[in-house]
Image (cartoon, rainbow, N blue to C red; front, side, top):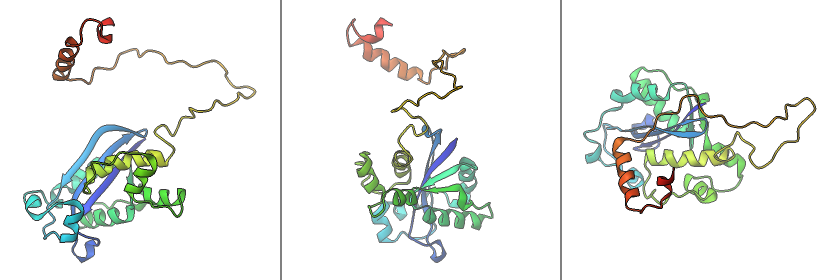
Length: 228
């Protein structure tokens, strides 16, 4: 199951009064596990940055001046998202901005049912408790110390961790803490993992392998890696 954890930064609160998107960040999950595949784009809003918005995300006019306009990146964003569920904190806010921008380009709108709102999940799960991203990080013990300013990609990465906790932890589909009693007719034979017919190729680059070998060579002849 592919999911996209997504966040945007904007110049304000309402695209109908002239506010625009200035940053999109998104993280891909497969089966609730981050794949390392991300989408990140700064966007020229074609307008000045209000002081109160700058204080939130720190993206100013000079920095955004040479960035592409949404019209140049909208299709690539749609291609990345596809028809996957979008995990968004306060989805109504981001969706109205994204669909406003996509509508201006004449591109397809993102249907509301494609979005999963983690703010709504948190409010239902913890009624009466603070449900901001920072508050949820504190509740779940997630390190967000690098979040001195809002940033779309960083917030998406943090939200991915929060989302997995909200739905039951990093392995929500596995009952690891209890063992079900077998029922009549169940197959009670033990399952065990089998080796792959074809081993997966290494994801390490030659540079990373060389760096590891150099590190190990400095540890002496009794290190674990030399015993395999």
